[in-house]
Figure 1: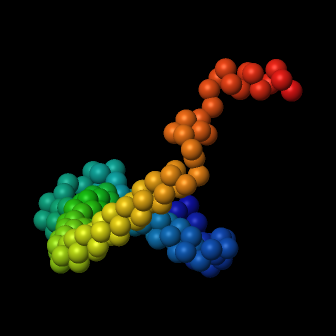
Figure 2: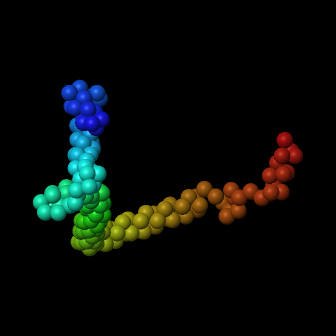
Figure 3: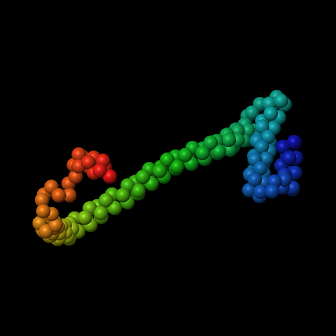
Length: 168
């Protein structure tokens, strides 16, 4: 009786601000009322001393099966949700790996097609580097020949630096 009173009171006056919570609480209370009714029927026959036979037995067994199915509904839903979550991760890994493999082969194909261009540009850049090095060597040699009278000029030794410090 208390479960019925609580369910009716909850249906008439929604006590929670959130409508989703009110609906879930109503479903919970209605489920409690249904289980209470099923068990009340069963308990009434047992306390009256009535044997379960004929249509009464079929009725009580049907109520037991309905109650068992309702009790298994939530755990079964959680198990199915867990199975789908695991399977979805396998499917996700499959599709992500396909995308990564496709990107790898596209990148390899681009590198292969651009390798001819890169080889040519590499050869051109080496030629430019060689020409620049040759020019720098020639101009350095010319500066050495024009600006310095001896190969030792411009090189300072420690004893010369010490002598200069003492003279100042």
